[in-house]
Image 1 (tube, helix red, strand yellow):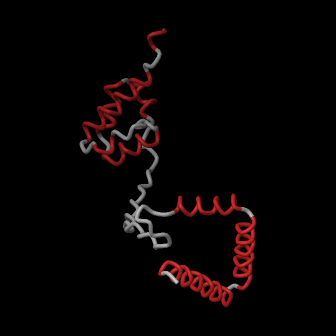
Image 2 (cartoon, one colour):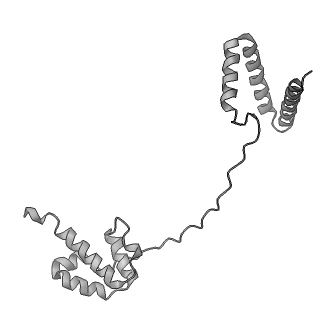
Image 3 (cartoon, helix red, strand yellow):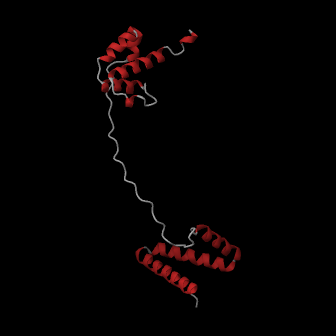
Length: 163
């Protein structure tokens, strides 16, 4: 008996042992696997095309090193980053579009200049002015005020070329 025959017989015995262990824990699953295996073996003995198809599947699953059945090395787990705390936004202090229509850009800039950065960001969030997430990096009140006034003016004057 060659070493290849010995290795195959040991593999078959290991499969039988694993099936017996499964039978102790879940007899229904063990019976299903045993039944499927019996049907597959009978069909492979009866049909050379089926046996060749099985061999093709096994060859396709064989890794480059040629060792079938070697447990694949799992990829290292990445640590899940702690979720960022969600900032719950308050309603805006006022509607910048209404102020712009009633008083103009100068008055809007003056009223916005009285607010804190968080209040300005509340207005931006409520009015959905920042669709590109540009204001998250802005840290100065003056910069945010100018940005809001620019967006409000652009939105209010949109289409004025046709008037």
